[in-house]
Structure formats: C-alpha cells, structure tokens
Image 1 (spheres, rainbow, N blue to C red):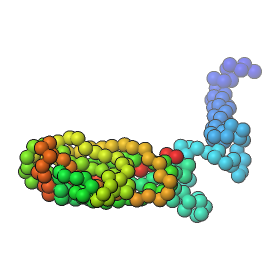
Image 2 (cartoon, rainbow, N blue to C red):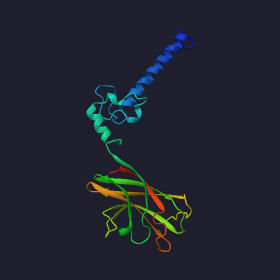
Image 3 (cartoon, rainbow, N blue to C red):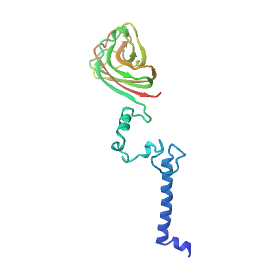
Length: 220
C-alpha cells in the first residue's frame, strides 16, 4: 500500500485525526491529575488530594450541589483558596460632630468590626462630603483604632488624613490606607471620624460627613 496516498484519502485523514485526538485526551488527563501532585499520572478514583486545580473546574461542571454538604459548609465559612477568610464592611455617612481640639475627646464613631486571630491586610477607604459651605483649611480624618478612649489614642490600624476639603457646599474628598496588623485574639476595631483646621479652630464641625469601607484579608 502507498502510505502517502492512503493518508490523503478520507479514511486516512480520519485515522490521523483519531490518533491525534487520543494523544490530546491523554495529555489532558495527565495534566489534570498532575496539576498539583506530579506523581499522579493516571485518572483513577478517588482522585489524589488536590489533584484538580480550581481553575480546571469550568462551566459549572462541579456545582455546589455535588459537593458533600459538610465540605460545602466548611468552604462557605472560609472562602479563600485554602481556607482563609476575610471581612468586608461598609459604614454609612456620619456627621463629624467636632473638628479641632483633642482627637481623644472629640472623635466621632462611625462603626466597628471584629478581627479573629491572625495577620491581616487592611484596606480602608474614606468618603467625606461637605453638607454646608464653610471656610478653607479643614482637613477631615478617618481613623481605625483599637483601645481608643477619652484618655488614649489607641493602637493605629490605619489613618487617612492630610488633604483639605473644599469649603464649597456639596464638595467631596476621598482617601485610602493599607496596613498589615497582627491580632493575637478576637479584637474589635473601631472606626472614627475627626479633623483639623490649619488655624487650629473648630470650623467645619457638623458640616462634613464621613463614610467608610474596610476590607480585611487574612494573610497569615
């Protein structure tokens, strides 16, 4: 038989396609089993632990309903790739009652959240809005603190301060801060709003609102 002529026929082309297809399927099987465990070279059941990467589960081919209920519940509690959880909190606008003077005695509470033991990456954002016209030189502040009181500044978990807000009504100002903190036990973090004036006065008190968002990711 002339092999070259045979391969140019319809039957020959189908044979080549079948062989190549089998090779591709074998390659995919090995890749899937060896995604994390290189010693897994064949598709056997049960699968080797962590033998299928999350990125290989596509088109809802492994829906939540197919996961053992106990495993699914555990996953929903800790949704990071390998069991690490997070915190996400939004805080509604609160009028900054007092600006100027002492932070310890004049701060306005915006809200609070709790961190469990571990090392956390905190990403905090502030949104300040002027509700009444004022004077130049007011610099609003958002502060995340642990243990703050009328006599203590508390431990800093992130501070946004420095930029001046426009004195015109309906003007806005935003800011953000990123900080890594280590928590030894369940800890309540309070979010406060405050501010200072360039002339050390009290201008702007009650004229500016502060809203905040905090995203905390467990990194260790």
